[in-house]
Amino acid sequence: MQENATGTGKVNGGNMKGIIFNLLEDFIVSRHGEEIYEDIVETCDTGELDPFEIVSPGSYPDEVFDVIVRNAAKKTATPLPALLKEMGRHALPKLAKRYPHFFTPYTHPRDFLKTASMIHHVEVKKLYQGAEVPKFFVDDKGPEGLALTYKSRRHLCHLVEGLVDGLGTHYHVPLSVEQVECVLTGHDACTFNVQFLEHGTRQGQ
Image (cartoon, rainbow, N blue to C red; front, top):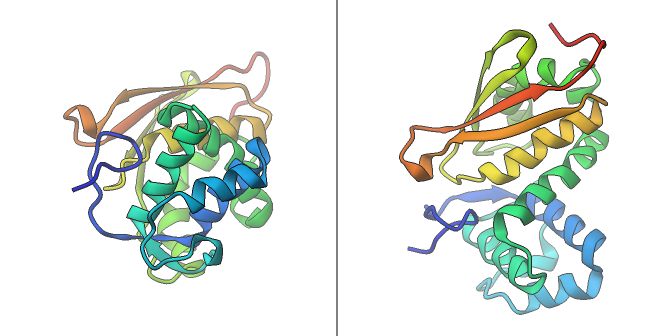
């Protein structure tokens, strides 16, 4: 079995929604240009699938995303974890623009994260029939921040870290994200400590 996009897990033969591929394409093109993205894709073995024909509502093999993102890391000389984090930071404002109703009810990343599981399991499945969504659990620690637990067989924890970081930018709330547990090091799930670094501003309740 091939390792997955984190570089240490395993691909389990599932499918991923096309929007993730579209966000990866947009990220690479914005950072490195259309020609580099085309070279990345054209030098990947994606079987009979043409990556240039991927559409957001479609479902495509996890392995194809894995192959493309690995080749992107190689072609851009970027460590895979760093590439996925940067993709997450880049993707968050794109998602907020595309799905504003997920974001506008909140004014603070704390409040958004506390409803992340509901958004994924209810709203995302409405938009994308058959989507295999991750699970999120939040332990609110009060003023100092919260613990965010992420469970998914894809183990894309670096991407999640980038998305959380992007939430701080989106809501204009400085924050720090530190991964303290990972399934790839023997834990039951991936857990992040998220600290809000505001000074004199109101935090979400």
